[in-house]
Length: 422
Image 1: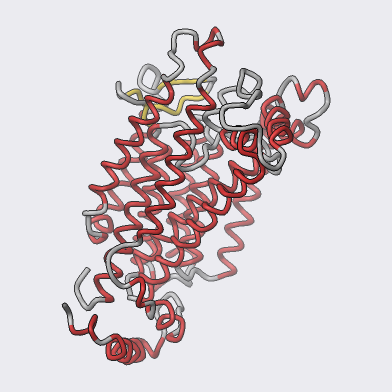
Image 2 (image 1 turned 90 degrees about the vertical axis):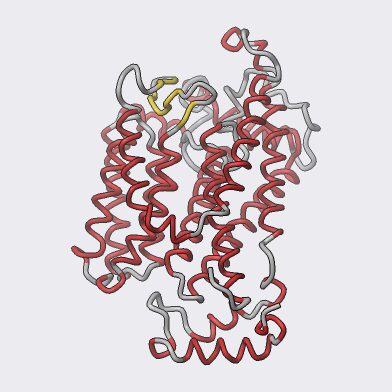
């Protein structure tokens, strides 16, 4: 075993000396020496990999599988799904989970240096796929939106790849622009143009929800990377203005907002707010302990396709407040852990790895917050799935790939803390 692992006190003293000798005691992204030592001085987390992170992710995946089965088992009673068997969506989701876990296991073997070199190319690939999905007879349209590429065994959603691509690209971009991060036109403007291009392609599908998540990821990485606060708030104001303008100029988006503000009028309850009202009814029926697993009534054709965007409503009805609270706490813990791993990487002078981990945390937390807010009536209805849990092959796969990359960050952090090389 390495001598540093056998002598924690000596390792910590050496770490203090090493940190104090670099750049006057401060990392480029502004993490003080004291915080770096506190983050790294965790003996219980030096060896192996983060088993608690893996356990929480597997628990969310397993609960999602059970709830997708519960929410979709009655769908064949509807003429729209009459040709499907009761286990159709369960079987496809199970296949997606197995494939996602296998791909995730492979991804954990890929060094972060490889992802850093590949980040710009992956971003270009995501742009090409976002263009392809808009081509008639190439992209697949569902309910007026063209967001999928049919691949036979599954439908691939390029916007999910775009979330991963923008996370890696923004982190790589900030590392390359670290010396000029205080200059707007050299540090921020090029990234803003890249996000705008992705946004235009997503709005053409249309998929405003995915654009909101991608903009949040990019902006958060710029902020965490140390971009000037005034520039950050200026860009935030511009984005808010852009989203407001899009809603104002789009009649159907305006109607959705008005329906959200007053969902219980007869016109809205039978129209744009139909899903919202039945979601709220589901939560109301669940009360504290729920109606029991499999006992939801709203999933029986009242709440349309509840196994996708409104899976949390079924959880609320069947498992009650307790079940919803467990899901919320699990996501809160997951996001917090992703940020801790990112801070550990930054404390080890691995800025790209740290920003990627924190970017994935923003992705998971932001998308989960929007989905939960929509289900609970806190936010206007938006077509975003609940990460790791909702039905959807490409979504679950890219979630697992992103988390596998963060797990690789954690593994490399631990290798460095043992005195090895990442």
